[in-house]
Image (spheres, rainbow, N blue to C red):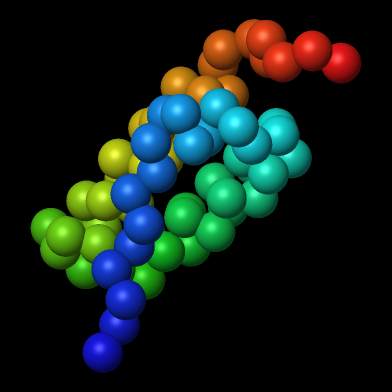
Length: 64
């Protein structure tokens, strides 16, 4: 039995570095290609990609 993909929140994504966000983005893009369109996993993956895009679009407000 396959595990359901994690739903990433914006708060979780904001804690990641840009490098981590790009790595996660690449992993999820591959997952989108592997999952059937319309499946819960596919929909979660697409929602995660939208959230990652939002996180990447905002300036890094973390110090240093």
